[in-house]
Image 1 (tube, rainbow, N blue to C red):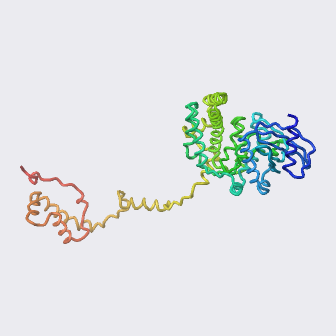
Image 2: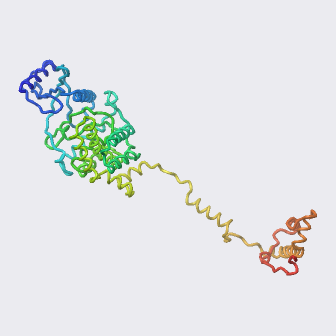
Image 3: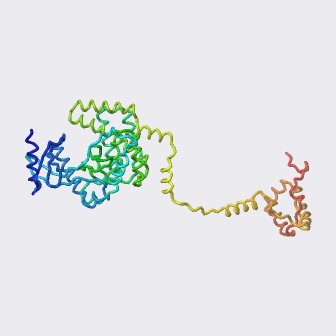
Length: 428
């Protein structure tokens, strides 16, 4: 197959008018027949899709690269490939793009204190702060938080229908998509298919990012999921730096959704195996799901923390306080004391009751004693007869007597209880 690189070089000259080729070499790619050619301005990459899915992927990538015009590219701290041209290649096409410099690295080699942690966080923050107009003007998908929640739910439902997902794993996936507060976030521009294979590094820095077929407005957590391949400590280390570069809202929610997307990749692998009737893929996915049972990871920790109602961390408390509206208390301390004084004055407390003058108390004593003696002498039977005959009741008589007496003539004896003579009691 030594002729393939030269064939691709010829296709490249057809796709890019005026291109001069000074060298060519084969390029490994599972989805494309590819070669690297050396042109006037450096190395270029020419690729021909091997299958229909690869052709669809290439079309989506071209759309993403076209949306990243000069303005958005200037805001990114790394290089992005540029599409230079395309030409017909049998039943498909050959596409020529610039080849980004840099080396590959393995995600498993990352540690929480690796030199690449800071550049990864900066790369993510730069992508996620791109304006949404990149998507709207470039014809790219724009999904809301609820769209993304529904998409995750559909994957879970499809995986459940295979009856191959362990109940423990299925239960925690379901709890995440049913927890509304985890999906209360602002979508951002996302790369959409980010992993170590899409990054090019040089001297401890990320110098290039490729694979823009899933560029869209979506969940920033989806661009963080791949870091869990290196372990939760690596994700936490990147998140700590990422949160300083942009306002991420709830770090806990972002972390949980990233863990969900990471585990749902296994569900997608399972669905791929069942739909393609590839038993080896199905067996591999089932084995991965079984390992998830014994390793609840971030999802298990998050759901356990919700059950235990673990207190918020310092950053989450600060964010919550910033969102809490100020409430003006209309009841001042002075008003509270005034209310207390009124209760004491007109309630049970007698500290504020001013005693009557001695003369006034003496003048009213005789009148009150006379009225009381008349009531006791009349007895209850007399009162009943008087009411039946239309005479004044004892209360009315007392009111009339009070009008004839001078006001304020009372003494201390009016509050005393006098014994009742036995002869005044009613008899059978």
